[in-house]
Image (cartoon, rainbow, N blue to C red):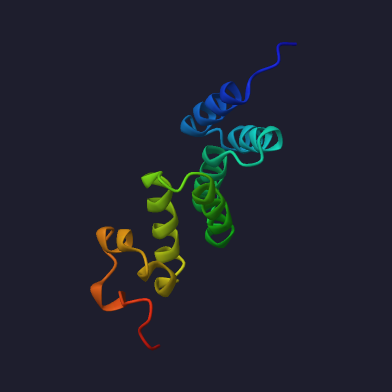
Length: 116
């Protein structure tokens, strides 16, 4: 049996995900994380899978972990903020300027030191 690299497994996971084979994609993303626990792409994509399965709350820690590993990745921020908005955690999203760019109403945006 040929042993695949983490990058090859991730590529196969994305292909499975894109073709709608969700169970296989999840299995492969988890295999990536077993081999490389701080893989931001696998964490992010597992979060995307959770969202598609209606598991909004369980996706948030996955997006947070991805962001800790790769904070410059705009797509990770987009997914995280969009999920905060979807989960009606507007206060958490309102402190991030990217939330404004994504359409979060200005009335929810306040300075960090504003009184509640």
